[in-house]
Amino acid sequence: MRVLAAGFVPPCLPTKALEPPSGTLWLHEIKHDGFRVIARKDGNRVRLYSRPGNDLTHRFPLIVETLARLRSRSCIIDGEAVACDDKGMPSFDRIRYRHHDASVILYAFDLIELSGDDLRREPLDTRKATLASVLRRAAPGLRLNEHIEADGPTVFAHA
Image 1: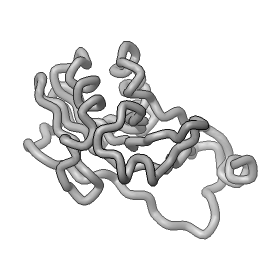
Image 2: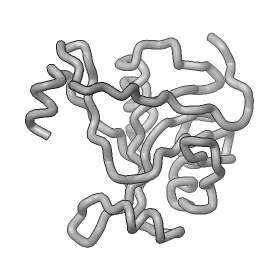
Image 3: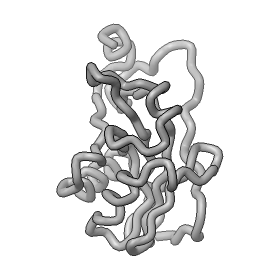
């Protein structure tokens, strides 16, 4: 396996489409109303980056603490930092304007690197299963973003 260089690793970005993809070989995920975050853990050191690579580490100290306690010595997780309003619904305004909010959760949806191994060439379902294992004993501030394996138009109709 390849080893990733230190620092920011850009996330995979979705491709715009007019219709959801058909067939059951697609994974579909909830898009929360938050900040895209690439979380990099090296030993006890954790850095959080935005989609374009800006450092967000200082904005989400509880996510940093939670990631630092993961058992893996190193990993890179792609996810979305989400803050909920008083009704439990995602609130972009709340995450945008509150810099240190205890209610911010990282919904993790992909595992880019684990223990020095670049996983990007592995199938997505394999990476997600490994991510679920990494997060199994994580604190509540770090959650696996569940996915749905179904026909795209059917999922979209029920969204």
